[in-house]
Image (tube, rainbow, N blue to C red; front, top):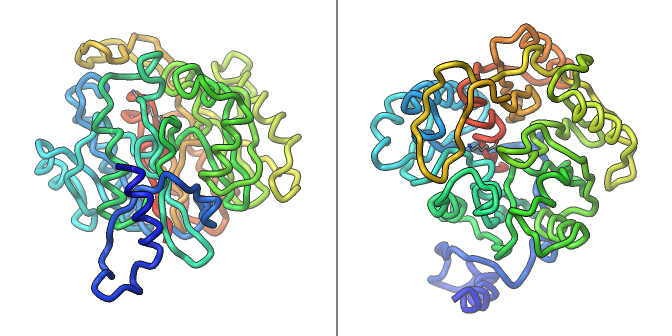
Length: 388
Ligand code: KQY
């Protein structure tokens, strides 16, 4: 079927020039790569048309029937909606509740999912220089599949990217068999990809491929030239070390990186190793990276006593005292705004001040996302931007 669709896709290049055939025909492209077709992933600091979010509900990941998480997601949606259009995908069962909890300016559409991490299961949107949009629909396996994934099954999540592309009438590239999540890489939109070895070389993703082969896939499907590898992330269990908790591009040639001077902090080693590695790196254009430090919460966020999630076979249990991947770096840049996690920590204000200095022309907005980090991620993980 894909072969036939690929053939039809070649015909679809002339779409619009055939009388009566101007309407959209959704295409899955498997015989070409974005790079071959002149498409690339724009940086997050490029203009954004819309941001996607999925509604949390599974009680074996979110405490208290996901009600506190829903309140936090609604706050994030409202904050993002100040800077771009927002669409929230929700199950049929939760539609009324979700609609009622979100501001009217947020569009709510029915999209079923296994959980609520659209950064990872949603499409990666691409542009070309003519301003056309396409997307990549990666293979999703819940952060490690049967090897060390977070839950089973993940079939609904795996269909999310395709559904979003259909809603948006966007053709999608389908690198069959290549497992990747959006939170595991950042791009500068000028040829550079940033990622971690801990995640992309993990046995639950693409064990049949070596580092060079994975680099090649990243460059072909993100339209890039150079991959910068950090070693580890801060959540080896949850996502196998997604880079979006550790470092990100803030403008061409400049990155932000987590930082702490507290040797006892659980993320001290990763922060220092990442900072030193980034300082020594050059991007695809040959620029030596300028690295900004962004503090971590002073007190590591941990799962507290009496934390109640439902038990379920095949799901990730949460133990009292477990360290959560709380990082202010897991923010979303959205046009003139930056939406930043807040944890009720002494360093919340310092993080906002540091990010305001890094983004002097943007409004830095803090949102209490403690309930989101209890589920394993944060603002960046629960959002997916679609370029303008
Ligand atoms: O942080 C993310 N990108 C996803 C976290 C998944 C957690 C599943 N419990």
